[in-house]
Length: 551
Image 1 (spheres, rainbow, N blue to C red):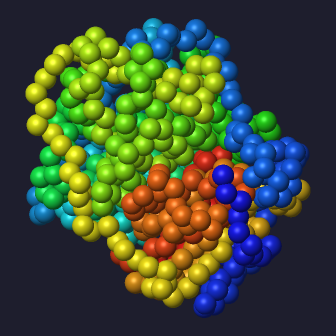
Image 2 (image 1 turned 90 degrees about the vertical axis):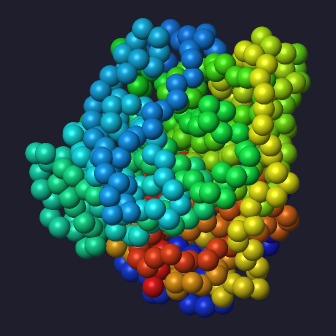
């Protein structure tokens, strides 16, 4: 682990300390007060980034399920259904999704109430073609407002799922336009909020590289419990160039959404919300302010599942959809051999060339596109996907059982893509610094960017359409940082070279305790207001978001 270098991060009280060009003046500061006596000592017993780097803390606290849990590798791996469009006329694919409550059998023999997209968890997968627009009409039949964000999408601001652009359910008391004061956020006002009642159409141009995206709820202050209750699904973008590469496809391409959960004694999902109805009071109970962890690992909504495979290559499209849990994945045979994890893609699509891993860390919201070759495993043999960061039951993720010999015409080419952006440091017109740290806010503690909690009415960085910038991100504890709208490349970690896991074009980067990471991106696509934030969902809900405006 590398300590951060000697440059100064964002100054206290400033969301971003900018070099080589001024940022727009900052608006007034609002204070978010979070109940409880949470402080840096509560997280780690330490108070500086360097000290944190010497003794990295565990991010989050684990809930314990109160129902019997099944043995691992007994439940078959579900494959989320692919949603069919209701119309394909005019060069646009149109879909309809209803957000509704339902009960699903996650643990064998137990019904668990969930909030869902179209009645399933994960929600239905949407498959799209590069450059072919998609419009999705979401209908909110849940008891609270919702927002939909297509994570990783190059999306106009009007459809990006800004946290105050709410879809109100039927009967929800009207809120004054632009006022986001329904749940104690210090009376924050957002004059640009756009509220819809019952339905909203989101339009995604999908003019972007083929990749695995995911969609999830993004309501201000309540993102974490909404995702925990089931509001997440996959969206795959494809194109012709990728399909001629010869990568494993069809039934040998598997989407894998990994998420941890915990269950109460009635079979319902356990979550330590201060307001279980998720209506008025945001936040979680004090022991879980650093993040909520579950003791059950789900893949595609099933606990520690197993999947039968041919003795052939498989393409695994892996998403960490957990609120706060980090994993370090490895593929291990029953006789202790590790299989290579051949990375062919990152968050934002194919790498230029494959990268081989024996183990692979994955932070919340990161995606990895992997090829695993089962041809050397005997028929009847098993390969476990294990989590080296877990303990007890969370050391297991899922398993594959080799069922048969089979022909395999797939391959992993030495050149995967020639359109990975090659921005250089010298292309950047500006360098900005942002610190991601716990800190005091009014009468409580929370998670801050540049010493400030999120305020929807404040612009934290103004960027010009088409400009290339370098952003330097500094962490106290683990923070997976996500930028909306754009993909980026990792330039450095701790003043040194990027890690193997940093290859390719990303939209989420895992900051380790005490670490400074530099990223480079071009702000192209669309003008408007966008977010960057920590994707530890509890951190996000407790203030660790900021705005950038593309002008």
